[in-house]
Length: 248
Image 1 (cartoon, rainbow, N blue to C red):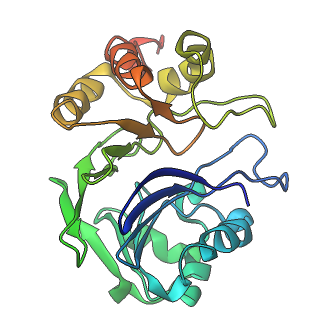
Image 2 (image 1 turned 30 degrees about the vertical axis):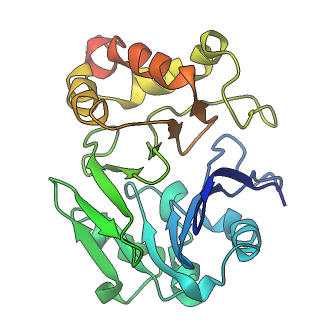
């Protein structure tokens, strides 16, 4: 069970749910995360169908799937929520996703539209019974047109979806960024192609720099902690991307 505890205090824990070792994610390695607060679970970007079994086994060591009351999807891509039909069967969870994408997610084999709770463009929040809170932070066009990140106030962890993503050779993805300058080469191609313009980066930075971010947890690649957090913000602030790099 390759699970990493990213934060733990009293009855609140933030977990990274391990790596896929089946070969089903060749080319698109993805991270799944779980917050357990006072026995209640919030599953973050549960992933595609191919990783469902691994994610289910790993999280079951920490929580009964029936205690997962919420699922957060940063956007509509299959590597984010392709396994949603299986999670609907295993949990009673409400799914929080941009209201823009609810009708598309029905194509993932789910039929109970009442279990979706659309997040308005301006964002929102979720409060656990303990009173602890997570925010749904607007991150539109990074890269999806209806996109959100998640900030956990108790841990200071910012889940950034595809922002901060890195594409490593198969089997070589470290859990944490060790050398930021070396890590940049695994991020550059993705960010330059999948972000439409630096203007949306600036809008996002204005929001997240107001938050006490201690750790950045992306959906792909390695996790940023300590000084790597500030270095990432500085790097992405100056990136040229999308329309700024293409000759159309």
